[in-house]
Length: 483
Image 1 (cartoon, rainbow, N blue to C red):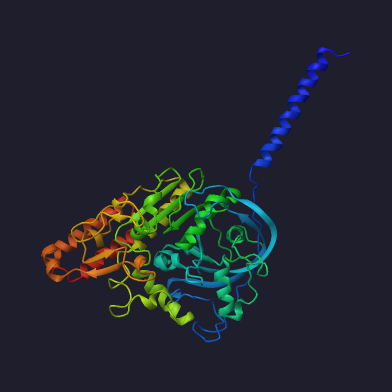
Image 2: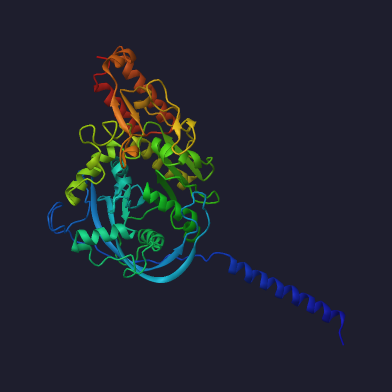
């Protein structure tokens, strides 16, 4: 006989079963989280010859800067383990912000990381910058380091480069037997770089929680930042949009020169975009702008090219030493009419100054919640592909962060050039005619005061750091402008 109690029991049971089924369905629909394992680390890998030796038994792109003079040590390590393959939905769509899914697990890999760290632990500022190597030119290029090496060493950062993609790893293997055991393709069966995201995560894990060999030799980081430039910023944007919410390993991200990618706005981790004038106009960033939020910032730097002269000065000697040719520069600078339409190529507005402050502000943001200052955007006359910026009578872009080299110009710096191949993104920097300079600056004091006012304002606004303000003052003081 059924009773009221029996009916009540069945009702409660039905609700319980229904609730369990709903929870089960939700778990099936939710993306699986991905625990990041520790890779096996070996090294440091011995370097038996000096950089440039024909045997190539040294670190590819071993730095030519005076690391020892800055109190820094450079070492290379191999990391290996098994990685997840990820599906990253619609990764060619700039609006794609879908969480990724694991395709398969247990895929073996072996790759390398390069570490540049303070030799004295007391000089370490507690922050590790982990750079995803750029492989635009079919080899590993550490473009963030090239842009900002002075600030990295003066501030006490650890810099780590990660070889995550098959193009770069295969180039290493072809370059030297030193790298013959590396493989990120599971024996050439996975050639879509779908392992690269987990490799980047595991590199971060090896730095944050080392097991066995410690690549940082006992340095304990308080903050680990994922960073990148251009092609690798495109990859890191995918990582942010599709993978980071599954792993939550990095404390913050700085993307230099993304290529028209929006970043999902529900992240709990601070994300900083730093963009050159060319990125805004030529790489579609003007058309995918996003408002600043409590977890997102964009700074745009007027008068800057995607590849500037500062980067060229750092990178091209290594290309010539290790590859025998400077890949893109080969066709940039020949005598007219060959090469780029406007010469010299490569802007001279120091993107590195703004980048240095952006890293500083990102670290404060991560560590104590201090929001970075907002910055004006470059003014756009016509949105399109490319977009056209508003320019003043001299031809200089208006809006954005205006460094002293734009406020008190002695050269016309434009982020966009003309000509074949990569010319457009290298920009140009033309000296201003002496007659025009005399009109602008009838005396050296006029020029000097204009530079100092502009630089002080940028320092007060937080767009440049004190050492770069001082350098601006020194450069203006010893110049002969207005004399």
